[in-house]
Length: 104
Image (cartoon, rainbow, N blue to C red):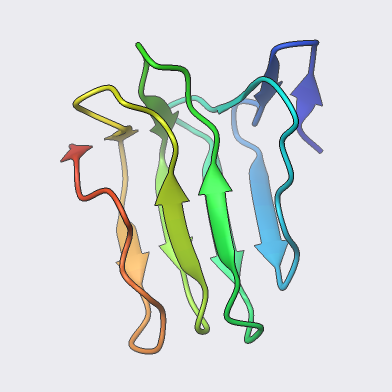
């Protein structure tokens, strides 16, 4: 389970946040990870998951998996929205990532 304070929801080292047909609602703050954190977005409900990012920082993840017919969007304005240390997998039925700014 991700830890959080008033500004950041952290996917801990070696941990996985899986949003299986679930949404992600952020009223404030940001999502963060580490080079050993995984994010999985899956399901068949065709909803968009928006990852809240700070304006000046990328989210760091080991692996990012998008499957089913989910859509992933990034809310940050920094040039490199994802620092990826592993693999990115986008399933055949999944929608593309809204921001295509990825640093590997």
